[in-house]
Amino acid sequence: MTKKEIYFDNAATTRLDKRVFEKMIPFLNEFYGNPSSIHSYGRKVRVAIEEARETVADFINADASEIYFASGGTEANNFPVFGIAKTEFNESGRNTIVSTSVEHHCVLESVEELSKNGFNVKLTSVDSKSILEEEKFKNNLSHDVSLASVIFCNNETGAVNQIENLAEFTHSSKAYFHTDAVQAFGKIPIDVKKLHLDSMSFSSHKINGPKGAGAVFVKSGTPLSPLIFGGSQERNRRGGTENPASIIGFAEAVKLIKREMTGNYEKVKAIRDKFLNGIMRIDQKGIEINGGDNVLPYIASITFKNEFYNNDPEAILMYLDINGIAASNGAACTSGTLKPSHVILAMGRPLEDAQGTIRFSFSAENTIDEVDYALEIIEKMTKKFSKK
Image 1: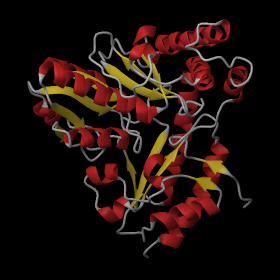
Image 2: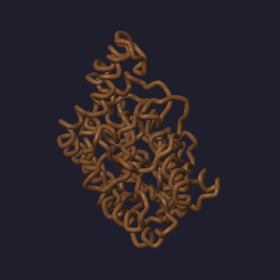
Image 3: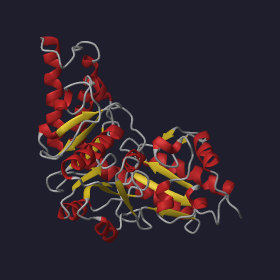
């Protein structure tokens, strides 16, 4: 069997589309003016940024004035979590934040920081599939809650929460609702008006756009203070010179995904189905598929049960890598530490199982042939790490 190079870590980042890169090049050399400058050099860049803002807004049925560009998904989550919570506290005195135990660390660590500064934080538990338990979520909502933040699609398991329901519950308590849609954006249709969202974060490099570009939708009228100070950019809410090349690249990636999203979804679904059917043929008893039925097909999280396998996350990932397969044991922001997934632990799984959980994530660039090769390697790996 000839060794192949296979990238199954698309939830961490995707390859920059060549068509996107071509749109970025002029804004790296030819159109170099500062978009805040009033001369022609700056005005040309400003026009391109505002056109990009309209492209992104149209994709999610928002108004252009409701889109704020940021440096990526992490800032795009920090911005509304801190910005809404602090502004609401100053205006109404409400100081309770509701979130979940399986958020991305950029949300979890944001609310943890707020808790150190006098805010009351309630993390709602999830079920064994990593789905938010709605009744417990509703029980956490009260008159002193200013903000609820719930991940749209879990970045480790692919499980999808019922965001429209959760937003409705939150609004019933007169609080604001934010969702981290970094993994869902560009994968499924998202209409911020139909979902009744107050804010939503998303990122460029998850949809074959450039790194260094993210965005936040903030519904008009939602209280929001700046996270970054020092300039009047982004309508006085995000100081600092914009990153024109990445913003224009982001918008081009959105244009492409708008045309290709349905086809991509069907192709990736076929890839994931083939992969997981193969996994079950290898070992239906000792390997568990995480996330349940309501998942996006772009992510496949599997757990090698400690009862059957010697789980060493570093050794497992190195075995895959040596054989040409790139995967991860959790979010890209934490996978370098090889700490057990907080998501798998929150689902009620023991530490030993969390250490044997691997995330494979797909894109439309992947192929069935790559799945076949990966399954051959995984089957060999199960024999190597088996306790039998």
